[in-house]
Image (cartoon, rainbow, N blue to C red):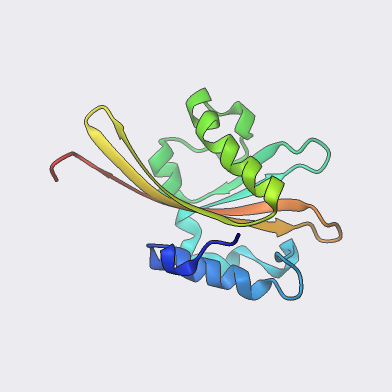
Length: 152
């Protein structure tokens, strides 16, 4: 089932999802060549452009937006999911596998506490087909985090 746009809290994610849907045409998802980073410029600070390697299905972070780099605390452009810290992999890998298995976009909201901080974020994952093949070759992953101290 596709995400219900009325359940997506952030307007940026609703807009990005609407753009993705408009690119679908007669297919269930758009092809890579129908979406350029220029098309999603307003969202790029909060976007991961993720490649799925054809022969290995390894997940690689091709481009990571500046806001997400700040959130992660380091540059991860070019890194593979299986090279990321274990805690990150345990949380991220099932989400990627769900999209790859179903071929459908996903939307979720998360909240977790770490020491004296509370982190909340919304995530939208949008698959893109390869140019000439019917396989998911790339994902647009938009994440909007917010970190706060309890009671503020």
